[in-house]
Image (cartoon, rainbow, N blue to C red; front, side):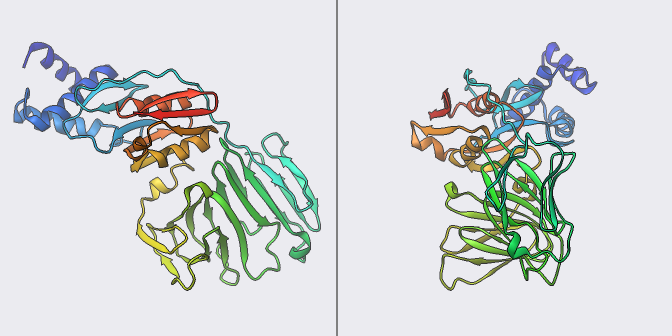
Length: 374
C-alpha cells in the first residue's frame, strides 16, 4: 500500500475526507472486496466495518441514490453528485446530458363540484370554498382540502359527488367528511360523495394513485372502486395504483385488512390481503406477493423508489411527475432494470442525468418529449 493510500485511509477513519475522497475509499472497498487486490484481508475487514456504517442508507437515506440492478459486485464508485455516491460498471464513464431543468409544481388540484363548478385549489385562498345543504368544503391552512358536515341530517343523495383532479406534476391531500385521509398522486382523480351521512357504504372512485388512511366504521365499510376492482376496508392504511396507462392495478396494504373483488374476471375469487402484501390485477384476476411498504408509498414521502424495476415502468412515473411524453427510439432499453431512490424535488435534468450515468441508457429532451435510446 502506497503512502498516499495509507494517508487517505487515515483521513477516512478520522472523518476528515472530502466527499470525493470518501467515494474513492468506498470504491476501493467495493472493488477490492470482490477481487482481493490491493488491500490485505485485515485491512479489508477493518475498512469494511467502517465503510458499512457510513454507506448511504445505513444511517438514514440521502436525498438522491442510484444503483443499477444488474450491477456486478465488483463495480467501482467513480463519481459523486450532490454528496451522493453513484455506482458504475468498471470501465464505463458517465455521460453528460444537457436537458431541461423542468421541476414539478406539486400541491395542485382542481375541485369539481356537483353542479359543475370548478375551483383551482392551489390558487384558492384558505377558508370555505363552497357551502351548501349542510356541509362545507374547506381549504385549510396547510393547503389540504377538508369536507365538514354542518348538518348531520344532510341528504347525501341530493348533495351528490365532487371530484378532485390532480394534474401531471401535482399531488394533493384531502380529509373526507368521515375523517378519513387521502393523498393523491400526479395524474389522479378521486370522485367522492360530499357526505357519507346516510349511505350504507362509504364509496369513492379512483383513477390514478392514492394512499388512504381510512377511519374505522364497522357499520359502513369504505370501498374504493377502480376500473378493475372494488377494495373493501373497515379501517386501515393502504396504497392503490390504478392508472389506465399501466393496464393493471396494484393494492399494497400497510396496516389492517382489505378485501378485493375483481370487476372484470367473472366469478374470480375474492382476495384478502394481510399487512405487507400487495395484489396485482390485470383485469383477469389477482396475483398476491410480498410488498415493501417503503417503496409502495415512496411517492407520498417525496421520492421515486424502485427495486429491480423495468425502465419503462420508471419512466411512466417520471413522465407523470414532470408532465412529459416518453418516446423510445430503442424499445429494448425499456426492459433494462434499475433500482434506487431519487428525490421527487429534483429537476428532470438531474433525474435523467443520474439514470444516464449508468452507461446503459441515453436521454434527449425536445420540448415536452423525452427520447430514450441505448
